Image (tube, rainbow over all chains, first blue to last red; front, side, top):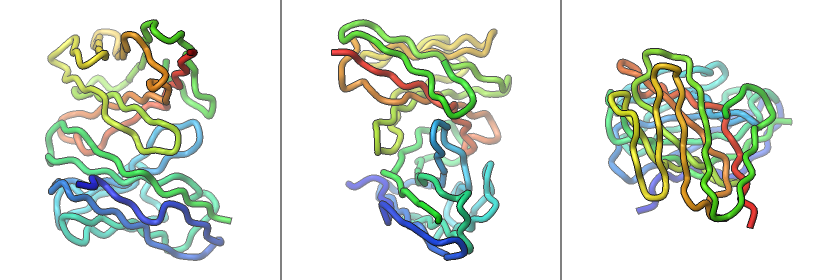
Length: 114
Length: 113
């Protein structure tokens, strides 16, 4: 049982390049999330998927797109990377949708945009 | 306690002492609160949660206290160990938006051996 896995662990992009961050969970959770974490700050929600087939914007969605590929996988795409998107990106999942529930986090992807 | 900005507040505690980490929240509608621990280079890890119908909840070596009147949350760690060194975040959510969890900026706990 790996929990939440993310790939890649590290990535360096040039301004304007695109990439997709991958996330998968093997806990049969309904909800999945993407956060970014900047130095000295808490996590900010980018997008979430309350259940398979649905996605919704979080606090900072601009510049990102997401796909809930199936119940297990939730990807985050940067179409045209900007230096302001340099951050650590965390994926998370939770079992319940619409109820208070613990979120389980992956190890993160450290992205640098030059 | 929590603060906004780039500088993380730091709490230094002697090994074996008790630690208290504080968090203030602003949303009166928040009714679910969580504490997470984040070690360097890792993702946040759930520690303990509490719902607004409770004032106190205890786990293994940890206790969360909730004061809804002043919108204050605290995490108490008993007999602090070197492995407790990490950044601690409080987080909150509310009915109708439990997926939209709002995280505090974090407090760094340093345990002095």
